[in-house]
Amino acid sequence: MKRTRFLLGTISGLTLAARSDSLFGLAIAQPVLPGNGSAVAERVLVVVNLQGGNDGLNTIVPHGSPAYYRLRPSLAIAPSDVLAIDREIGFNPKMKSLKSMYDNGLVAVVQGAGYPEPDHSHFRSTEIWQTGVPERIENSGWVGRFLDESKLPESNLFNAVAVSPVLPQVMIARSVDVPAIESLSGYGLESDRNASERSAYSSVLRNGRMPFNSPYLATVAEIEDHAQRGSEQLPKLVAGYRTSASYPATGIGRSLALAAQIIGSKLGTRVIYVQHGSFDTHVSQRTPQDRLLGELSDALKAFYDDLAAHGNDKRTLTMTFSEFGRRVAENASRGTDHGEAGPMLLVGGGLKGGVYGQHPAFDRLDNGDITYTTDFRSVYATVIEKWFACPTEGIIAGTFPTIAALG
Image (cartoon, rainbow, N blue to C red):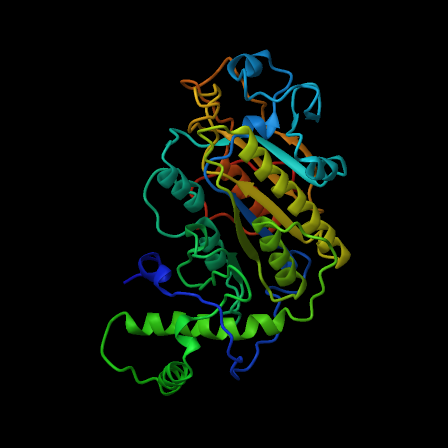
């Protein structure tokens, strides 16, 4: 059985739970930076999944378009409330923190991100964005393939980290195990709460004798060993980090605070995944979406303030994505239904801020949806080639132009 198929089928069965017992004495791995010690080798990508299909038109608002106001009589954001970038577009009024970062050159807006023949299903479109493969079913994620191709140290248990309750498909690799950590206090194997079970399992791992024959048992044992050792080591490895910002008391705030701890502790982590949502706003959209966008904006500002205080802001790039945008016209419930293209955001001290790609074209809609003008794989290729200085071969199928936001 291929490792990716095993992970897809069973990773959710490795239950994590809070642990009150003391940590047991496996040796703590020393922090490792992969590569040759260059600035590129120390770079980190933070991937933020805006789950549920974020409405791009009320995120980066086309306040210069009469069609936007005609098609959204109750949902449209008044021109006087928009945080204007120029005469055509601007940020949602709840995104003041991110707008201030944009004004300081720390944010790039990529307009019209999508893919050919888009799928309106949450499940299939999420799969497409996370695997980077619209044409067929693929098990591994595009980040997972990057981890495989990067030849990262096998001894490092934290080459990548998912700050989430389960491992997302984007992080599934063929040979690299990625821990899913919702919080430090809750990271550990359920079986480790029982001292005798932990001792018995550790004994099996040490002597290499398995209690029964199975073609999958060695893979199960290896992954569980990595999870067990990681849950013991991580709290100790990040214990010395001191947060230098005031994070909002929200889910995304807590997730990015943990991401800053991991980055600041120099564990050799190359990619961190976090999630935020749900943005599936079919009914009464304005209140929940405005709240979620405000939470994202404030959390990202605190995150980069924290990173900057520790000298890590220029080596950390954040990229947002969502499985699709929403339809242009509001529905009868003052919400929006599943659409197609939408904006992606790139945030960090190592990019060229500004707006990239074409603004939404209301005179060229695809059956009521914004037509994509930037293939999302161009953004992925930009991150792989320009941020990580890695070829896309084996990671992204095909050739896609990069975006000038990264040099």
